[in-house]
Length: 128
Image (tube, helix red, strand yellow):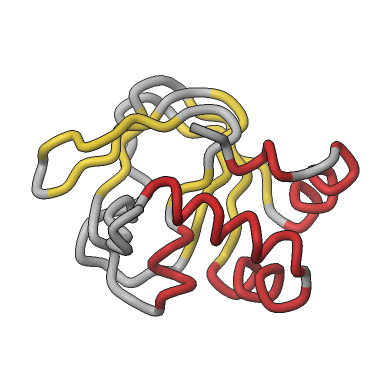
C-alpha cells in the first residue's frame, strides 16, 4: 500500500513539513481518540501506530503515512483511535492547516483522496 509521502517530491515534502510542527511522541501514547472532534492530523516520519476501532486493532501504519485526516476533511467525529506502538517522530497538522493545504494545493488534495481510496475502498473512513 502506498504511503502518503510517496505522492510528493522531496521539495513538496519539505513544504508540508514546514507547514506543520515536528513532534516526538512516546510509545503507548494515544494522540487521536475515537468519538472525539477532528482537531489534528499527523504525518508519521518514523515509528508505528495501531489503528483501533472499539479497542480492536484494524490496521498498523508507519513512516510516510498520515493519520487523522479523513475526519477533518469529512467534518466528522473520529471513528477510530491511534496508539503509538513505538516512539514516533511526526509532523503535527492542525485541522485548520490541513484544510488550508487541502484547499490551496491540488497535489495535496489528490494525495489525500488517493490514500482514502486505498484505505477505505468501500467509502468508509475508519482510520480516524
